[in-house]
Image (cartoon, rainbow over all chains, first blue to last red; front, top):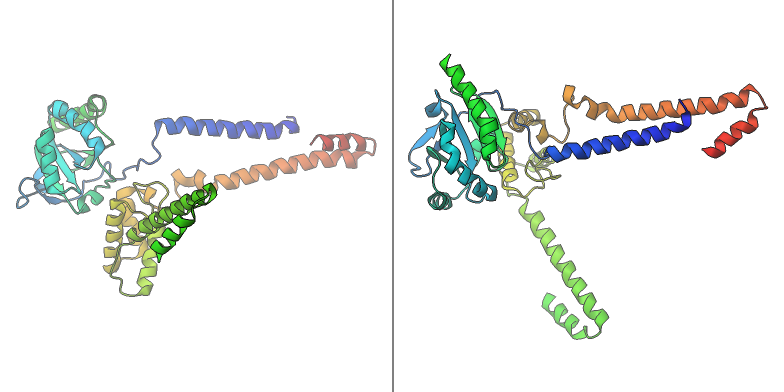
Length: 182
Length: 170
C-alpha cells in the first residue's frame, strides 16, 4: 500500500467513526441510564397511599401477581402526555397498575388525579424519594414491569405510547401469564 | 453604596457610549448574581462531624455523576435527585460506610453510569485502551514512513535526489 495514502485512510476512518457516532446518537439517548435492576428482585418497599397516608402498601402486598409500576408526578410535563394513554389503554394491560407518585405535594397530586382521571388500581406516594432511589428512578415518567415473583422484568423511560404498550408491554405480560399458567 | 453607584452612573450616562457601558455593567451584575445564587443553593447545609469528613464528602461527590443533568457532578448539581443522593451519601458516611461501599450501593441502582471513573470490564475495554491503540497505530505509521524514507538514502547516493523529492511532497 502506498504510504502517502496512510493519512488519507486515517482521515476517512475518523470520518466514518464520526458518521457512526451521529447515526448512533439519533436512535440512542446518551442520557438514558441503563438499569442494572432488570432481572433482579424489585426493592422491598412500603409506602403510604396517596388517598389515605395512614394506610401503607408495599412489595409484600403486591407479590404473587405481576404489576406495572408507573412513576408519575404533577410537576412532570411528560406525564401529561402519558396520562391519557394510561386512561384509554391501561385496561388493555390486564395487570394491576400501580401509580408511584414521586416527590410530589400530596395536594397537588390529588388535584392532578381529580383533573385528569385515575387510571391506577392503587397510588402510593414517595415524597422523600427514597424508594425511587432504590428503584434507580432518575425522573418521571418511568415504568417498571414486575413479575409475580417480584422480579423487575422491564423498564421503560419516557412516556408510554400505544405502540409501547402493543410492542413492548403486552408481549412481555403475555409471556409472564404463560409462565404462570405452566 | 450600590444604589449610590447606580445613580451616579445614570447621571453620567448621557452619551451613547456611556449608556451602552451602563447596560454592559447591568448585565454583568445580573449574570454575577445569578451565578452566585445557583452556586450557593447547590450546597446543602449538612452537619459534618469535622472538616476531614466534609473534605471526604466533597471528594466523593465530585467523583459521582448527576443522573438528570448533563456534565455535572453530584457535588455541583442543583437537581432534586442530586440533593436526595447527596443526603443518602451523607447518611451512609455517618453510618460508617467506606467510599467503595457507597459507590457499590449507587451502582447497584444506577449502574456504572453514576461513576465518572468507569471500572475496567469487558464493556469498557475499548474506552480504557482505545487511546493507547490509536497512539500505537500512530507510532507504527511513523515507524513505517521513517523506514521507507531512510532506506533509499542509505542504499545508494543516486537515489538521494529522489528521496529529497519525496520529502518535499510530505
